[in-house]
Length: 171
Image 1 (cartoon, rainbow, N blue to C red):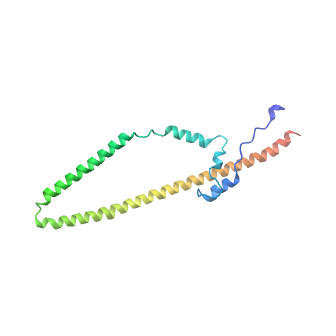
Image 2: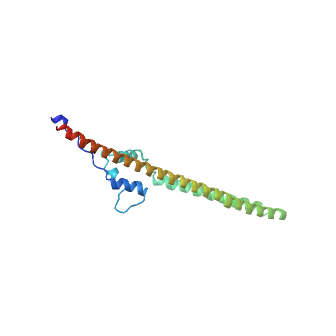
Image 3: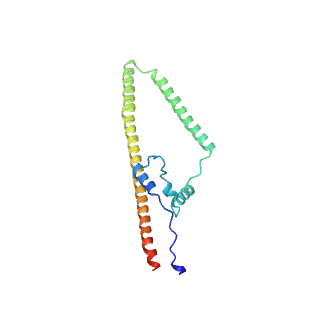
């Protein structure tokens, strides 16, 4: 009968690609394209996700806004620099001699705290962010490899059931 025809098989997912993804964990492996399985996706999930991403992407900022913003920032920094130089020149020339060495000491201690403590904290924060980013990427690769393995398992199961169901229809 015509109504009992089996549905066409979805495109096959290559076992080598899935194994390459799970083994390589995102590293480039010669001759294996880690995105090949995604390109063969029958529903085009990746293409749809990219289309949704492109729809949500913001419009770029016009060049005149970027250049005027930079000009405002440079102007602000220049005005602050001139103001600080003016304050140091006006009040620094009238400092009594016993206040000069404590000023030097405060400047040196301030530089050490700024360059030592704050820069160290900044480096630690950047290192933590890099570690979190690497961990997130690793988890995403693991989830992707697991999903590919599950698809391959589902595909094999469908092939087995087709082999078992189709001959029983013709008896």
